[in-house]
Image 1: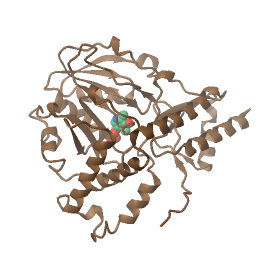
Image 2: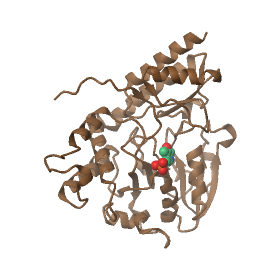
Image 3: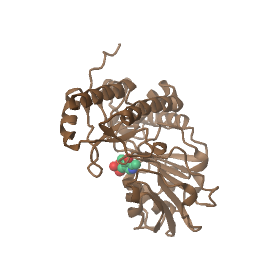
Image 4: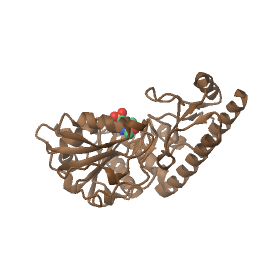
Length: 368
Ligand SMILES: *Cc1c(COP(=O)(O)O)cnc(C)c1O
């Protein structure tokens, strides 16, 4: 069966975000009967051989795609990125101290939540410049007693992305690095030698809302505070292969289809090249236009989330209405920042970014 040519609009949502159309079609075809089992995936026991095979394939594909080393465990949890803001200190802080680098709204939220469980300190912050830069790691105030150092590697709202992970050892810190990679996971390779734990909600780049990915180094398991809920204790979750309680089975299955799709696209290195091409196309256009502006310093602009403003903000509604008419959806910026935001995750083809640029060009022409 060949799929009909797509007539779906291009969806620039920041999350939950657009899926590869192929994944949606596969899921639709499997909805009533997965592979002749007579059951849809949502109707299967998580302990039955059918679902176990789905789970094992998804985990193996993800490990291969992200090149996760053997001494890291892959956990599929629930609660989203925000729950991890509590689950991480519950598991890693040992009730002592942790250092946070504040580069936007998400790291700010992580800091605030961690304060319930440990002494959470600000190691560096870009609040003064409206989170349009990244602080040089050489200047971070890292405590020698920190149980971990937290950064958000892609700030979804402010559009700021670390282009390389900091090397904490080289900075004289023995603390493991915790990264919130919710909104750019699988868009570029991860240097696991610099990471202790990575977490991310699935709904940006991996799958449906409802499953949360945690990749954690073995030696960080087994240190949860006594008050940590069992279902959120990484040691217990790992020992039970993410099935201590019922996992979000359908979300894991859809994420698994996305992993298969990613492999077919050539894996993460190929995705990264495409993501660079997409982001370059959009930023170059914005930088050369008279109407649009992106305020983030060029060296730390996100490849995934591109906030931009019209120099004449009174035209915002007209811009969005025209975009919608063209089948370019969900371009409104986050309410805390304003303006527009184009999220161009893995599932966004370059043709979608080109369609956006064509529209922006035309809109600019009609304004002068
Ligand atoms: C979306 C997002 C989250 C929030 O995830 P929830 O699943 O809503 O809890 C956390 N961190 C970052 C960087 C995000 O982009």
